[in-house]
Length: 363
Image (cartoon, rainbow, N blue to C red; front, side, top):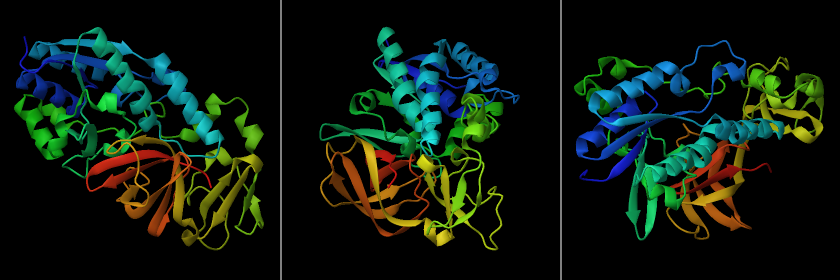
């Protein structure tokens, strides 16, 4: 009988999840490793070799670590669950003129729920992942907070985890810096793993060409959307574009238009296949609306609560006040914020704690 209980550990074959599994095993948990296959690159129509979490080498690396340390390991195929929900949402969001964050959606609706379902089937009390974040219980709630290593912190992509999920989740790396994890990999006898490069690409867009992915997924897309108008804020038509789904808020490069000055995409209007261009300062906003709220630290947001709001993963955050608005949250920033993109996640912080998060809406 283990000292701490039975835990199902998501193992991608990378350094973080492998060290997580070995750390918990060493601490006395009964570890069961599981590697989830979410996508195969042949389905994407890409010629690039599989990398990251979806390739056979990674599966073998995860299994080898489990076998060497004497705990069970399984491969779980969740391509159907992943594809129906995450892929379709990814396409639908771009077609709606928004910029999706599929990793957040996958964590919230697919990976954690898939892990919990299998954990229950295997009588595991806990699930664990190699994310850099921390979870604690306080005043009857399970609170997600930033990892110690802010350069690796992943609390932003975990805002959607609900209380029942957080209650059973262990994230042991949150107390460490990446350099310490690399040293642990060496200490465990995995020098190659300690040097292994990290992958930041979307697993189903291996070449980072989301436009090519959309074209392959939506029949006749180019013909449907080609030739829309580039306009300025006052409505002046200044050129024609390749189709609104192929542009993102804040984009400057690849516009194929010369106006004698740098211009940026400031708004996307899918209803009329219009892309609005403007100067860099026209990307600035001082408020936004966020929907699909998941409450983490509190069960509601006190009216006017001061918070640091992050609008993208690598954003340092900006001071703001939060107001309730018919089930949504209106965010009023103290200063102008650049490049607010509908479809992206907004996460509200109080110190290092995640208050809540949601999806940025169009105006």
